[in-house]
Image (cartoon, rainbow, N blue to C red; front, side, top):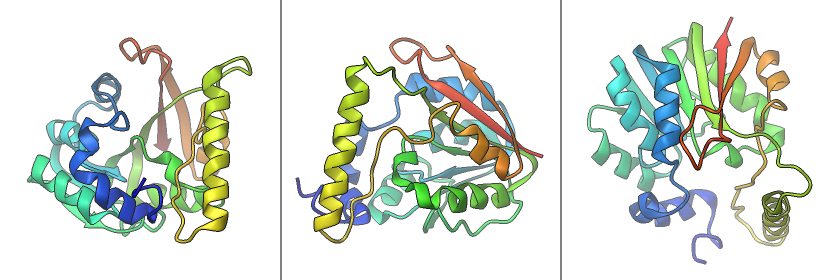
Length: 217
């Protein structure tokens, strides 16, 4: 409750020490499937790195540099403990301070923090951070069918958050049903990415997860 009534940044500062034992941490089977897609790389960046779930995997895959950026000092403190060699940056994922520095960028479990109005700014920053041929890899899903209870639960959660943010400041920005496949493809293509997706690669019960690979032209 304290987290929900705080700002997004302050809320994650409060949650950081407990985050890895909540259901919100990206499951290992999803991260393992991303590992297979990514393979060995030179320099890797995790955007909205949180406590370092994806960073721990990139730490094994990146030969040279592994970096993460997040706006929560509390989450960065946890990531630093988990991945000591990582370069960690406190900053806004919508304004990445990198220019053609990485071979791969990932983002897991955090795309719901990006408002629709900021999606172009967010993806544009990732495109700038990657070298030509670099890949933006993330996990998402397809839109659930109208008969799915999850679809209506997600819409209900989003509606509650919209009302909360309309009447209380600062905002807590977290929404579901964002960056869905294949709806996200035009956004990525607009920023110079060639887009493909791998489906059915995650172990049960996450077999419906879609791993999107956007390669910078």
